[in-house]
Length: 84
Image (cartoon, rainbow, N blue to C red; front, top):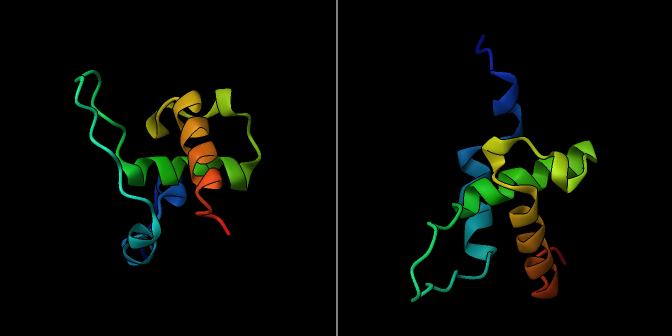
């Protein structure tokens, strides 16, 4: 029997991610440079973590990215109808 680490329990399985990814809006490239963007899958893992645990955005574990980044993506995706 396979044992998962606790943090793996919040990761989206590959099979599910293959179905979710095409439904998400494409990211725009920033021409100004700046920080590297957080991978979309990492953002979705973090959103699932927040939605399943009910934790505050500022209490999100750092492996998912910053809570403010996740919250910004969540707001953008809600506005675009991703979760309808």
